[in-house]
Amino acid sequence: MARMRSTPALLRFLQSTILAAVLGFGSASSTYALAALIRIDKPLPNDLKDRVTELLKRVRPADWEQAVAGSKVAWHASWSNTVLLRVEAGCFERQCMTLVGRLTDQAINLELTILADDTVSMHDVFNHFWGIESSPPWIFKTGGNTGLVAIQRDQGWLLTACSECTDWGDWRTTIIEPPLSKSPAPPELTFGEFSQKLKEMTR
Image (cartoon, rainbow, N blue to C red; front, side, top):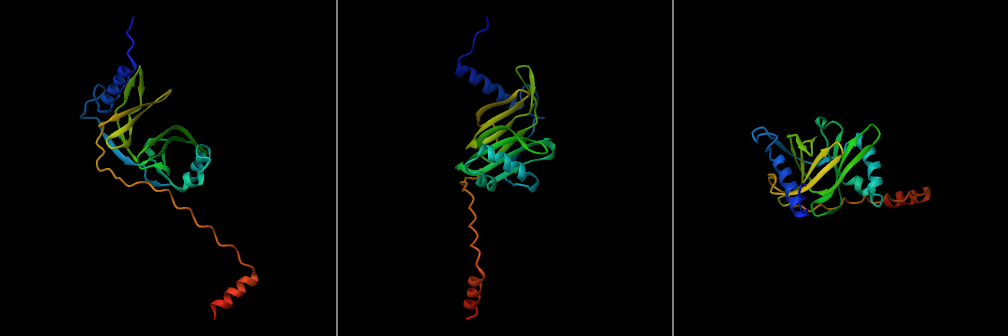
């Protein structure tokens, strides 16, 4: 009978297996394992705004307007229909709501919600976990030298935390401030009030 690993041992096994895949061991040599650092820091494009708004109305019903105003994206044609959305409202220092979604013509289908920084390390090595080929890992920076490894599988996402698992380069320590709310428009003047204002200006 196969011996069951204890929970701490299982976690160590899973983390070491994923870390080996991230670093390119086993499935590919480190010579061919490439990674790119990207930031989720692009302004929300107009052609995504309606779909992002509808998504945030569902996941941030209490402050969706502020969430839309504080949204940043990372989106590239090579990712097919995947979009990364960072909501810089209601953050905890550098860690903000970060969403991974699939684009359709009418909506964004939410697949993953995490709390993370704005930097992602994207690797190009495909891996096999439990007999199924999985997508290359994305490592979302969470703070200091720590990260959250996210690997997409047909049945969903595989997540695990890691430390010292990639080179983050310079880390900005700026704390995210919530976007400033717009001042309400002044009340409309009646014709009499408008005439009085004109008289006061010409004195």
